[in-house]
Image (cartoon, rainbow, N blue to C red; front, top):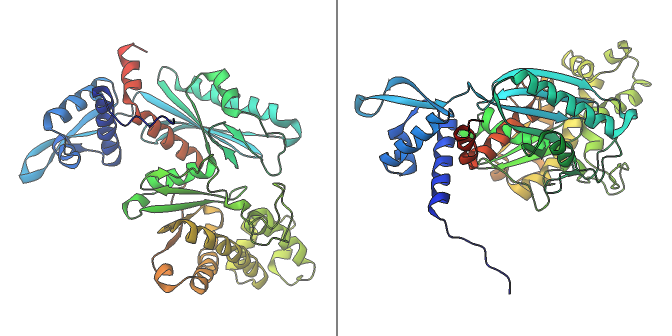
Length: 411
C-alpha cells in the first residue's frame, strides 16, 4: 500500500511558514509597516510583532524611518538588513567562471572572472570554480556567508546535480558538480540550470512581477535556454531540465547537434550560428560594410545593420526569425504572458524584435498574439549570478529558523 503524503502541520511548521511569509513580503515591499503586513497576510498584529522582533534580533530585518501610513498615522517601516549576511553567486560557462559576492537584497560587493581552457578539461574547470569561491569567502571576511549558488549550463539534472551534456565541452557527463563543491565548502551549495536562474532574476530584479503571472526568460549568451517563472516560482520539470529550448528541434533533418539530436534551435539562432552564416555569406557579399572588419563579431554585424547594411540586417532578422519559430513551441506549451530576451541582441533593437513579432503575428491567433509582451531584459548585471543569489535567498527564506539558529548559536 502506498503511503499517503503527510498533509498536517504542527505548530513549529506554522511558525516557520509565517516567518517565511513575512520575510518575503518585506523582501518584495521594502519599508512596509507591521500593520500593512498584518493586513496582507491576515495574521494577527501580535503575531506579526513577534515575528518582526525575532527577525530584527537575528539581524535579518531592521526598522526604517517613520512614514505616513493609513489615516495619516506615523508608522515604522521594515526592510531587509543587508549589513551582515552574504551570498556568493557563481556562473559556469564554457570559457569562463564568473563569481560575485552579494547581500540578501542583491547588491553586488565584489566580482571576479576566470578564464577556462577547454583543452585542460573538467577537473581544471572545477578547480577554477573552487578558487573563485574561496576568493569571495576571503573578501566576505567576518560577514556570514549563508549560501553559495552555482548556475550551470544545461541540460542539468537538478536532483543529481549533474550536467547531462554540455555542448562543445565534453567530459561533464555523470560528474556531480554539487557533490564536488560540497566536499570543499560544506552543505551550503545550491546548483541550478543557468536559464532558470536568469528567469528568477527577471522576476525579482527586472520588476516583471508587477505585471506578469507567467514569465519566460530566454538566455542566449553561449547556449540557448529558458526559465519559466509562474507567480514567482520556477518550473523545473520532473528532473530539472525544463526550459532547454536550445535542444528543441525545428528541423528533424537539420544540422546535427552534439546532444545527439538534429535541427536543434541553438544551432540556428545563437551568436556562433550567426557568425558562421556571416563568414559563409561574405565571400559573395564583398560590397557589405561587414567585409571591412578583419575579425567578425556580433557587435560588428549589429552596428553594420543599424548603418543600413542589408546583408547584416538580414543576418539579424534571420536569427530572430529562427528564435520566433522556436518560441512558438513554448507559447503553446506554457502560455506565458511575458517573454524576456537576454541582452545579446539588444543593441539591434526592433530589427531583431520585429522579426520575432512577425513570426508570432503570422502563426498565432490575434487573441494570443496581442496578449504577449516581448522585450529585452533591463538587467545590466549578469542575470545568472543575480538569479542564483535570489534563488538561494528563496531557499533560505523558506526556512528562516536556519538563520535564526546561526544567531542563537553565535555563528
